[in-house]
Image (cartoon, rainbow, N blue to C red):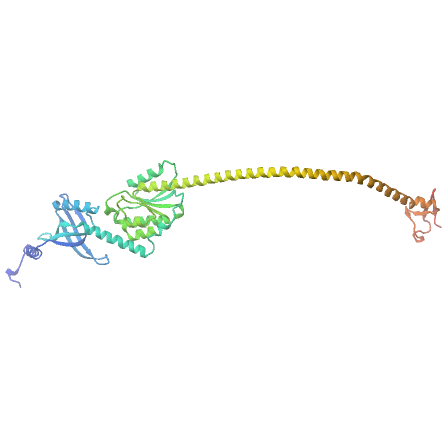
Length: 413
């Protein structure tokens, strides 16, 4: 059993730990860590946790509570945000100067004294470069840019928060364009910032994909904001989904100085939602100008062709008149020749025809039955038919014998 002199109270032990840590870690230390559970209380003190994950970024391998006292936090926050363009919040990698503290009641914690914004910027740049490298290795980084935006792109699928001011600005600019172009839009609501934004936007893309034949392009828009709020657009999965999407993707997800990975892989990147609307209106304007140019070209071509045909027809008419005059004179001469020849030929033909008719008449008279009967021949007729053989009659038949000067009837006995 332990002696009474060896027994410590919890407070005494914690005090001993405090003194030991203070003596063992007397200096300020620069540490790399990721922020988590950042909270600011009513007194302006910032309470948070620093964590470190394994090389795969999956499992937390170290964790420590920390605090930034209000007088220090106000200065560090202004400095950090002005340098990085984003608030001091959870989920960012930082390089901070800390002291090791131990409190008998609250245990060990780290007190933040300084911060290096360059480290955070460098980490973001490294992460973004890695994603772009992966997209390039996958062969998809320029796929969406290779798609052709239709000349008349007025069926637009919109991914945005329905309550965002950027969405309202986009619709107002699009629907009230000075040219009166008609646009058909369909909103696919999505969360546009925070941890759920990536999955939400990808889900909206999948819904559009199921009805892709109804749209000419996809617009992803949100208004400006802190750079940290745009971190979801530096996602590999979201960038890969947009890069391989079968419709042109147009982005307007921040201010001009903000360029995300999604902007880089998109077909077209505009500064703001309003700029996206102006781009679509401009594309329609260019198409209208091209249509007018083609129409004018067709009209001018038809007019030139008509003029050419009129000149050609006039040329044909002149040639035809000239040919007709020559042809009429030639035909007139031919007709006069034919007329002279006919005047000579017709009387002779008539004379020859008359002689031929007279000769035929004489021949017919010679072979006429009447002339034959006058020579003493007779015709024997039975029932209106001339008898040529004796076998054609029998006893009792009535026959008629025709002479030159009359007829007699006989009965065969």
